[in-house]
Image (cartoon, rainbow, N blue to C red; front, side, top):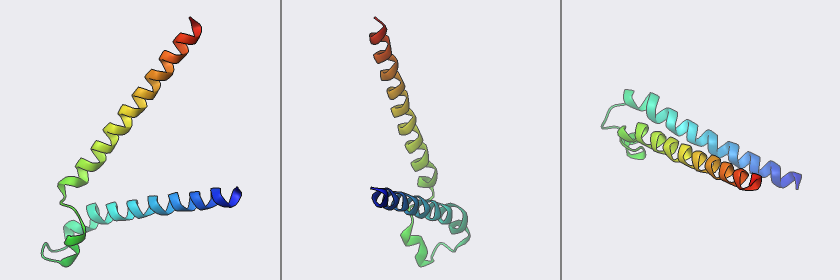
Amino acid sequence: MELADRAVGFLLSFISLSIFTYYTFWVIILPFVDDDNFIHNYFLPHEYAILIPVCAGVVLLSFLCLFIGFVMLKSKKKKA
């Protein structure tokens, strides 16, 4: 079991580091590269650099609020 936990942890760390590296390169370095360079083919337009994290944050916050609401309703039913 310990080996499986380690593998999952490594995989999650690798995915997180890959996303962080991609996003950092996309937002910080890519604006200084010429627009006709081939590297721009591997990245979305710059508008999505703000849109994707904002949408992900809204979805995450919505699920968090739903979870807290369900927990509050469940604890209220236990008291009654």
